[in-house]
Amino acid sequence: MPTRSFRHDWEKSEILALLTRPLLELVDQAREVHHRHHADGAVQLASLYSIKTGACPEDCKYCPQSAHYAKSTGLKREEALDIDEVLSKAAVAKEAGATRFCMGAAWREVKDGEAFDRVLAMVRGVRALDMEACVTLGMLTQGQADRLAEAGLTAYNHNLDTSPEFYGEIITTRCYQDRLDTLQRVRRAGVEVCCGGIVGMGESVEDRAGLLQTLANLDPHPESVPINALVAVPGTPLQDRPPVDPLDLVRMVAVARVLMPASRVRLSAGRRSLSREAQMLCFLAGANSIFYGDKLLTTANNDVSDDLALIEEAGLSIEPANSSA
Image 1 (cartoon, rainbow, N blue to C red):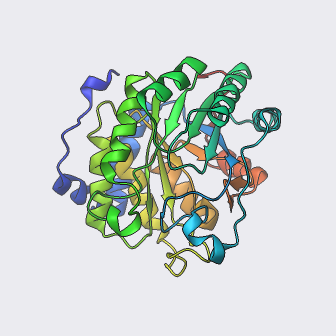
Image 2 (image 1 turned 45 degrees about the vertical axis):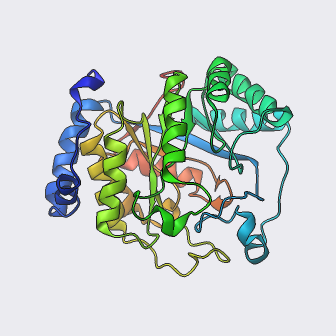
């Protein structure tokens, strides 16, 4: 269905009404929307790999890679990885069933030069494996976005994290508009957008509605919407935050599905803390992608064999290779 048939004018009050709707009614609504747009029941497996770790100048309170918290988290800086090493990891991920390979670098913004040239080579190499290639590198100029597009990049990840109103409580080194500007440059370059947020950082339900409103009113909608639950890493300012109620995550998935019918809604960070039953509910509510593999940048992820068993038990299928690469 063409994206022009989707809404991009959601009011926060409408989204709040969805987030606070009786859970089973909300899941039923999301399920109906999901069936209309994703009838094949396929789940995309995406692998996430850190190509440059630590020493990020941003002060995101949830992130162990921030240089601001390095002394308390103990995370060591690692320079950008060798191209062949990264591509070997991509090949392993493909062999395990992943169709998208995502590469993350702990940068505030992309700097032109040797490191960025290596990223371009990695993108070309992943595409040569017939996989989707996604990167998250921080802020981009238009010229850098265009170069990534020329290299064959499938998608660029740049999360909004939370609502515009709560954003300043979590990050002070970059403003919300900086993020929106980067997303606009990615769109101009013809690259898909991967953009979502995090729940459990102390935000209100209104803030969750504000995040979803911003995402759903982007035109077109992000092709991928990662829903992350906070991983409260020791040494970060949010280390003492209590775990997210799993049903709150189900609600976020369901409302994201209602608002952005054709997007992939991806269960991302924090999934390891969810029970099998909670993950099943997320699939029921419209999630159709997961980050797959034993690690997400610097935090642990679910066991691969457990994920495959879960998908099979849910009666879902794995998105085949080359379906969208």
